[in-house]
Length: 349
Image (cartoon, rainbow, N blue to C red):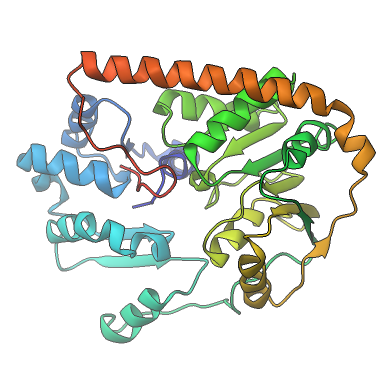
């Protein structure tokens, strides 16, 4: 079990590589793909099922006969266990664990020792082997941690994103919402910056295509929400930009952990507004380090400010047109009145 779709595919790639010589059969069960094809794949009893909780629960509830395929399950693995044990996944996990045999081995992997994991360790585990190489949430030693203070209404972050990343081989820019991520993508495209966007309001095919383009080096910049903050292994990321700071300090650590991997050096730059000072203090207290002020060459960054304003206006119009088309399509397909998915916190299915 894993919390995000992209991480599920990454895990499947590893099983595919390691099991190539032993006829290992694996299947990926995630939202955004055809349910009938996934049900058929489950019915064929693969050796390994890599799934997000929402879609797996949906499949077994729509076809209870699929539960029989899990009667002989020997291992349950929770990857990113701290995230999976949050309240938003509780219902799905109860359903999934309920169809598994009691005699099995359960393995939990987490880079974050949260209260829920500590409580589970003390209350629920019996005769468990516990390996811990965990000294608290830490950032890599060779990671440069900077911040840039900017007013909330300023266009400087966009100007910097358009100009400052031009000499960076590979960068991930994190936004807090799907709408903000999509809008920034349109702005940068208008400015002639090659980017790929990744957020949960995109179709699964587009999400995978964006990630593959970035991994392959076809585009140097990936714009993403926190669906890309955990587990994704892209060793060559030079820079992580927090266009919006995350609400939770621990999510900052997960984000900047996308760079400075495997002994490499890396750089993280966070845009900080007057409303983010408390967040920065919490982050610094958590990682026991201070973020350094980034010395920005204002004249250099603002050279193209007129183009940035024009691109923002054009991008806003395109976003409004797309939103209008989406609303029209929803009404046509009978989806009117359905609640919208929260922008950045919706769990994966």
